[in-house]
Image (cartoon, rainbow, N blue to C red; front, side):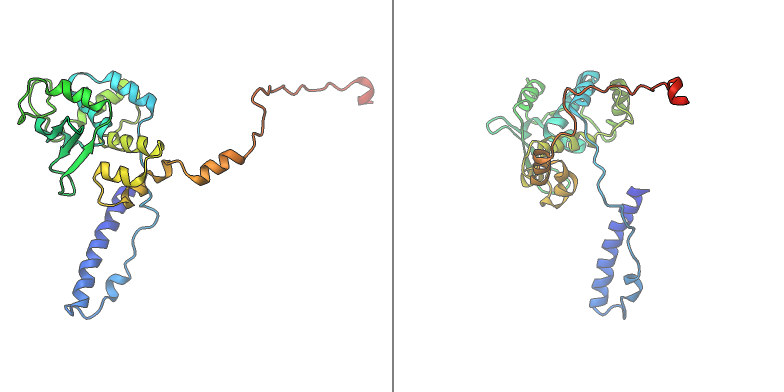
Length: 245
């Protein structure tokens, strides 16, 4: 319900922009009708799910074969499933350790910076392949296609004990969340993910970043109990004969 209402709010924004343009151009006499339409409230707060380090380990240990390679590269790069599927061997630049995303969601080419671990994986995957070959292939040798990640994600989430099961996009959130929790600037994370500016990045990940308020509170609030404090059970005191009298 929250997602549907958030989508409705976005559609309403586009519709009002078009209607306002028509009104300013003189195509309609008044903007009163749509000014009275209000968006749903409290539906745009992001609910970001990301995998913890323990969940990452369990999930990767449960994955097998080519799907494990796909998942691992998603975690290491923050790329979307479709972006990973379209990668060619030629899109990997070992000289500067980057992947070139030629068909991004924004329509613009972007260069994804690879972590220290990612080139090791990619070098193994592309060994002996030509530049035009898919960088990632299924176990049967063909390239990954649309929606072929859905069933394996459910199966391996169940095997890893991750409930409810998460979608592939959570791997992208996990990559960005790890960067945010390590103090990486929002502008850098936005560039890595391909966001046009930092607004979307801050909306989803800013609360995970170390900040002055949190650091100050934790540094100045004292412990309320001793670290070696032991809880002593309260014993009921029996009334003596004299006290009952």
